[in-house]
Length: 328
Image (tube, rainbow, N blue to C red; front, side, top):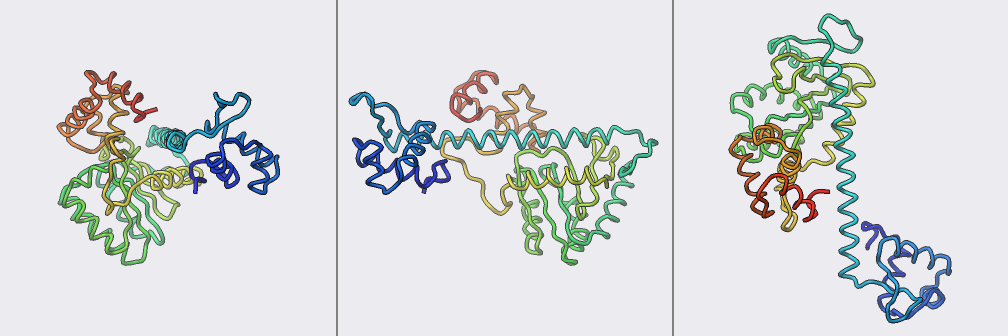
């Protein structure tokens, strides 16, 4: 029952036994549970590492199990710290992949490089995407870090998307959480889902990207201006890294049809991302771009978070967020 919180079966059994019979020692526990004493001692070592047992004040020399309410709080806090560490590792993977992409994007157009094709201007980019869509046979994976889409852009995408899905191509798209606030974006996503497309959302995305059949990727040269140019990448090593990046982000995304939930009094994923950006000193404009929302919305999110934390400055908001356990 408690394995997901870090206890194996024997350790949980010993912990429960200590709660019901606090005075039992190693030998008594072994007899009651029918386990070897070395298993009991190993379980006690794990319980001690998890702070679920502590020395008894009333009976020096013995240890006692902490109460379940305190014990579960300890285990949940530990799990939360582990999840935060995992998220940091995911962010590090994203940063490494983004750095790799930027190195390719920085190459001169006249510098012939195997596995790299340069596209200049929006016309070339759109023509290449149309060709890639026509040639895709099995799967397409997309990062769409634009936030709310215009109706015109969505309508322009409809024929290509429909053609892909009608051919049985598996299509997965990751949007920003902010698209959930756009009725026509959600409506378009639901239309695609009815045809078989899968979609998830995350608070931020590292870059814009299209991967076809895990063999070809298109990424912009300038993440601030996708019309400035793009590169088509086909190198095995590069595609392996980009596919791994997509899968790690996909794993942490939420299905677009699923409503986001707030964890108790804590922040939503979008608010947590905004809080991290606030603590790092980003402006409302920078936060708005990363979240795919308007400048006004970003300012409202920042103001609301500071009010909830009782902070008078962004630095103080970061400090209080750490104290509340929202940030590590």
